Image (cartoon, rainbow, N blue to C red; front, side, top):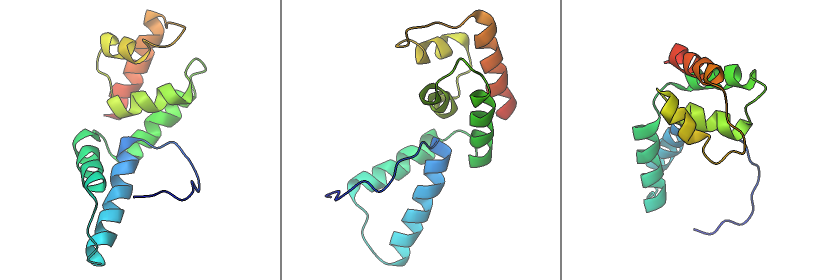
Length: 116
């Protein structure tokens, strides 16, 4: 598949991607078009890994955006992974040049647990 141009770019959680790909799948099925291997695998991956609903993931992202210490890339990574422990959160922050305090980690975990 050749991409001619990038029309736009936006961040999405896996739940949003799952819903969008479901629409694409339905459209392809309706038009009797064959789906590429990559598209089929993308749909399968989004279904297996999207842990919460679209509204819940958007709500989580909004709550985490209110925290000043977090970058948007990290926030979307947290929303996709839905960490359950400090160790999982630390793994997300492993490549960052800063570390969060235990209180910050606990606050993030509380926010994540409240959206599940």
